[in-house]
Image (cartoon, rainbow, N blue to C red; front, side):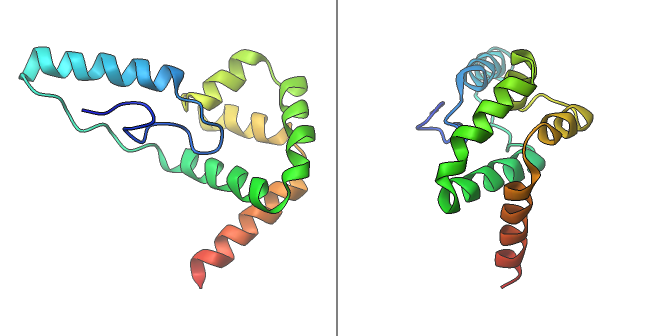
Length: 120
């Protein structure tokens, strides 16, 4: 059973997978012990896929904005919140605070582009 990059478990927008690989590995071992077989790794939660799509869209259309966005991300958020966001373990309220700490215009543009592209 593949994990990490080969298993498609790397966060698309950032390449972050450290704790996801650890959690997946522990769950696979637990399933092997309990059921004598590995399980299917669960799909990522939907809203985190949307977050990734938005950031990937910004990377594609406005790559020069990434440095200021990441600078603000680290300036305006505690490191623990950033890692919880990357690990996809934040609650919606914490995600709203995280997203609100970033410049809204590029994110709204990307969201609009994604919504329009999905309709066509």
